[in-house]
Length: 512
Image (tube, rainbow, N blue to C red; front, side, top):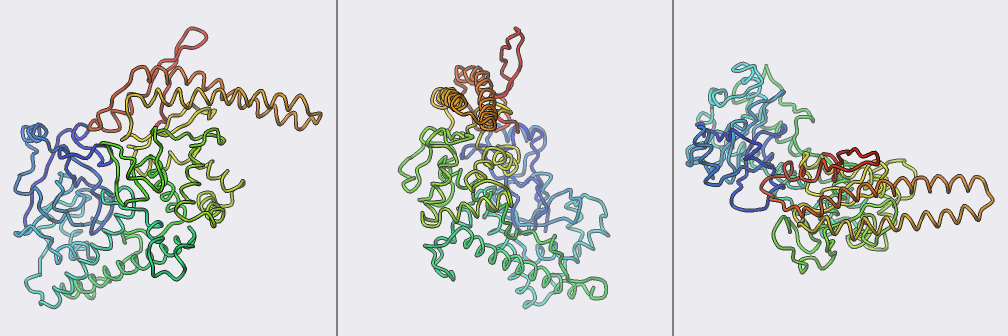
């Protein structure tokens, strides 16, 4: 094995993005650039600018990766780790940075013996002796004793088979969630099309599909853990450390995910929102639209929002309100007959033991917590952006970054904000008539409370209209290559005049 150098941009803010931020084009290459503790496969969420001008900059600063290591398969890890290092395959299509040191063998293919060894308890203990710091350098890995040539063929084949299966299990797990570039469809959806389930798939509920998913993830977790323990046993024998080490692997060190009801139902909701915007489609698997031309023909089962705007109201003020769209999505996927049962299960998974009907709790989630979860999933570089008028919840709506155009804000103002203001005004008048007609003091107090909330929302929307008007008139054009951080800032910090002649700065979008 030998070192494959590294790439160093000397300016990650300028040259590195998460893959979901940018449009798909040849300028960007997958970038192995550190990440979470993860063995065998994964962590390829970033991309690096690989244009001629960018590479020229890296070279000028002494950081350009040697071309002979581009498009080569190797083994990589995080250079700095607070716990044990985690080794994984570096796919052929990725570039590796200085925080993801990489080693290669002479035919540039995955060395399954070495990968199995590096993720074994033997390697961990030997590494602590060679270098007891938080940094795992290439030299530390190359200094580890390699006994592959002294290992019999049958054992080598066993190690290769176990390591290959470990890679496959973690690869599947990685692709089950949206952060993967190869994400196809959320797993609860796939159980609708599998024919060998113990129940009739056409009548399967969300709960039933989740239970099948739970069974499968438990099996995969157990298999990976058993494989790692078997590899530990083999390497303990090879290195003669039977009296010093145990092959046992702790659950916390198995880097694939078991089913988690709250997390997975939230991920299901996220996938549904992706379908609402056309990022995904019920007609096809995989990423459908992340820049480029929007083709309505690819969405026959569940058409996405034509105008790229989905309001999140405190009630059903619009027929394309996000809760109505979500209910329609669940009905399309799981059928009308079990809709009520499915909505109850989803609402209970998101807010266990909470008050309110299923639809009320789902609305509460979209209104209060969906965007927080989205920002967390997409590591503070969201792709669905939230227009948010403020703490009074006067106006909220989502739009999809990759379908944004310079008229999106104007459409949001004229087609959604202004009509909503009129709806609020009409509702205040209706409530005031009800208050005048009732003699019940408790009912009057309740109505006054609602009217007070509505008036606060009206005031908030009036101020927010100034912000939206300012942005709409600019007709901002985004360059996706600039990334979310730069583009998001273009909609924030708008000066709004106050009644006393001073001005405040307000944000159009929810803060990330």
